[in-house]
Amino acid sequence: MVTEAIDFKYLLVDNYKRLKISEDELVTILVIEHLLNQNNSFITADLLALKMNYDIKCIDKILAGLLKKRLIEFKTKGNKTTTSLDPLKSLLYKEF
Image 1 (spheres, rainbow, N blue to C red):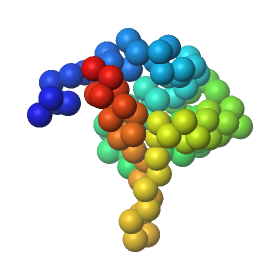
Image 2: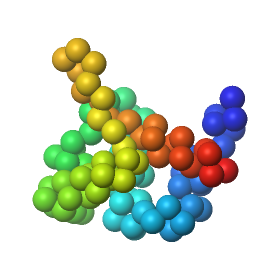
Image 3: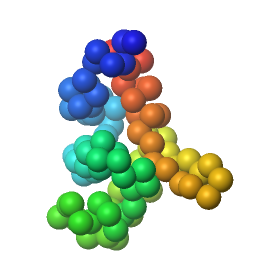
Image 4: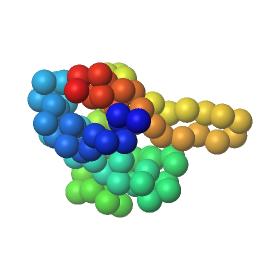
């Protein structure tokens, strides 16, 4: 599959300006991806605050902006909610 051969972080850093993603949003996305890769399925502002220098209020604002731009999504299946970067990844892979 093409998406497996292309590094998500490379595409993100290379294209974030063109996609109108701020540096605050960029670092938040990178930390979200890091946490997802560590098998954290639901990423909250509290969890991000443990890894970042931003306070929870600031992180909430960043997450709201990412949701509004449809770059991240929260999916609920049954009683389980998960965080996904799939919308952003789809956009980046289309751009590539």
